[in-house]
Image (cartoon, rainbow, N blue to C red):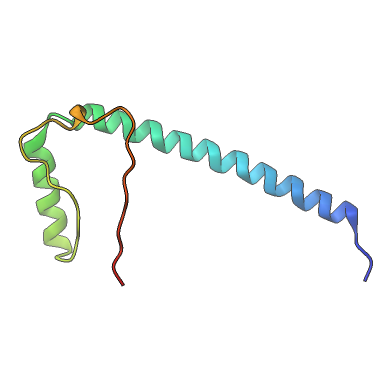
Length: 86
């Protein structure tokens, strides 16, 4: 079976365009997350109420609940790990 290099080239270009679009969406999502963190980091009562609402909707939800420290006190860069038990 002969290799159609033109078709491969076209597919590679399409994958590359998709990668740029995914990167743009990721950067936009990161900016939105940063804005939301800055906006709501000191509104602990509001955040607790959101967690309570989520628990009402899904009793199996797992998330962090803010206690008495503003979220903005987190380091500027951090790694958040999600654990999904089987």
